[in-house]
Each structure stands twice: as C-alpha cells, then as structure tokens.
Length: 104
Ligand code: HEC
Image 1 (cartoon, rainbow, N blue to C red):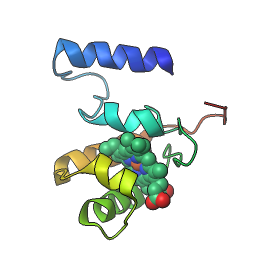
Image 2 (image 1 turned 90 degrees about the horizontal axis):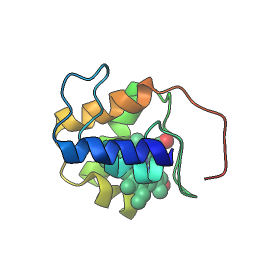
Image 3 (image 1 turned 180 degrees about the vertical axis):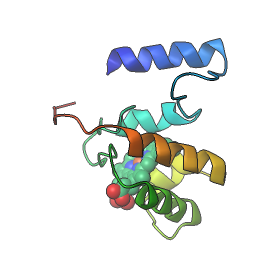
Image 4 (image 1 turned 45 degrees about the vertical axis):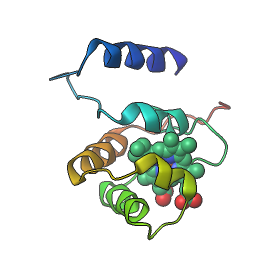
C-alpha cells in the first residue's frame, strides 16, 4: 500500500495520467489517505469502500457534498466536488475487489 501510494504521488507529480488502463480518478490521492487506493480503510473509523454498490457510493458522496450526511471529515474531504469527479470516484471504488482485512 505504501508503495502504491508513492507510485501514485510520483505519477501525479509527472502530470495528468491519461488513458491508463483504468485511469485513476484525479482526486483519488486524498481519499486514499483514509480509504486506501483500493478501498480498504487505512485509518481506524474509516469504512472500506471496495466493491460497494455504485449507486450507494454515488449517493453517499452526494450526501456529504450537500451536507445531508454531516460527517466533518468526509465533508472536508469531498468539498465542492463536481458530479463528474464524484461519479469517477464512486466508479473507482465500486470496481475494486475487497481484500483480506489487515491492520493498517
Ligand atoms: C480524513 C479521512 C478521510 C478522507 C480524506 C476521506 N474519507 Fe471518506 N470517510 C471517512 C470517514 C471517517 C467516513 C465515515 C463517516 C460517517 O460516519 O459518515 C467516511 C465515509 C465515506 C463514504 C461512505 C461509506 C459508507 O459506507 O456509507 C464514502 C463513499 C467515502 N467516505 C468516500 C470518500 C472519497 C471518495 C474520498 C475522497 C474524495 C474520501 N472519502 C476521503 C474518512 C475519510
């Protein structure tokens, strides 16, 4: 996981990653700090997102954005995100395969 994060940061520094096999959302780096790049939580209290239903993830993110879910951490993380970016993140996490639970 540490490796993956480092790779991601390096890629981000090199510029926009375009047309990768399944392109990582531009904003994934921030989310990964808590939810992991592959949707397995990195901090206590953060939920795993890997393999969660797409509609559920999309709706949850909209609720944080709109303030209907009032979790300060998530509201700060999501900010005024566009529908397109929100959709990209929901799709990414929905497409990940859940992994064996480990201690972060
Ligand atoms: C600082 C840590 C942190 C960051 C950064 C963060 N999250 Fe979260 N996330 C949480 C926590 C904690 C919760 C549980 C909040 C709650 O009680 O509603 C959560 C909840 C969620 C949920 C709801 C899951 C569910 O089962 O209802 C989604 C979806 C989500 N985060 C996606 C994201 C995305 C996408 C990003 C990047 C834009 C992100 N998070 C960034 C900590 C974080």
